[in-house]
Amino acid sequence: MADAVGGLLKLLIADGYPLCLCGVRAMVRDGDSYEIIHEASSGAEALRLIIAQQPDIAILDMAMSGMQGFTVLRRIKAEAPDTRVIIFSSFEDASLVRETLAEGACGYVLKRSAPEHLLQALNAVRSGGLYIDPTIASHFVTDKRRIGTRGAMPLTEREREVFRLIALGFTNKEVAGKLGVTAKSIETYKNRASEKLDIRSRAKIVQYAMLQGWLIGPPS
Image (cartoon, rainbow, N blue to C red; front, side):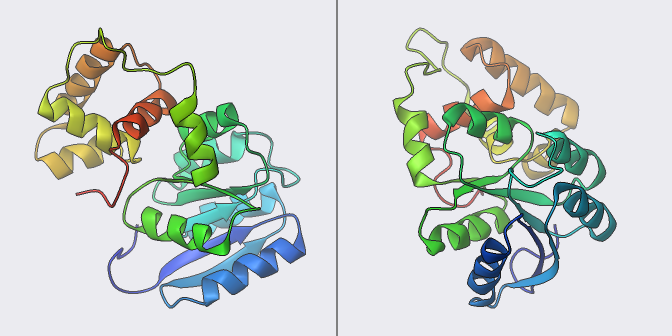
C-alpha cells in the first residue's frame, strides 16, 4: 500500500446503484486523506480497473452485476495483492462475512450503518487493520460455534502475535518482516497455533482474534 501515514491514498469505489456511489463519494470527499481515482458499476468493470490501476483501497458492493460470488476477491488477491478491499453490503449473514474475510477482504460495512462507519473502516484498513461493522461483529461474539475452547493448549507470545497479524490481513512474508524472522518461521508458528486451537482457516483465525480482543486499535 502507498504511504499509510501521510499523503493521499488512492480509492476505487464500485456499486451497482448510482445513488450509493454518490453517497460513498460524498462521504469520502468530506475528508482529506483519500483520492477517488475511479468508479465502477459492475464487478467486471471493477476488477478490470483494480488490476490496471492498483488502487490502495477498493470499496465494493458484493451484489453488483458480474461480481460472480467471490471470484472478484480471489482475482484481486492474486493480481492486485497490495489493494485492500472493503465490502459495502446490505447482507448481514455472519457466515457470509466469515467467507468474505477468508477470501481476503479487510473490511465489511453495512449500507444501513451510519456514514462514520465507512470512514472508520477506511481509517482502520489504511493502518493495516481489519474492520467489521459493529452490528455484524456482535454475531461473531455470540455465535454458538465459538473457537478457542478452555481445553486448548495456551499459545506462546510469538504464536499469539503471528495469529493476530494474520487476522489483520498481513501475509506470511509481511508478518515475517514485521517480526524480523523468516517466512518459513512464520509458517511454523502459524501451524503450531493452528494445531493447538484446531483452527484451519483464516476466517476462524479472524473470529478467534475478535473473541480475544486482538483487533481493537491499529496494529503495531
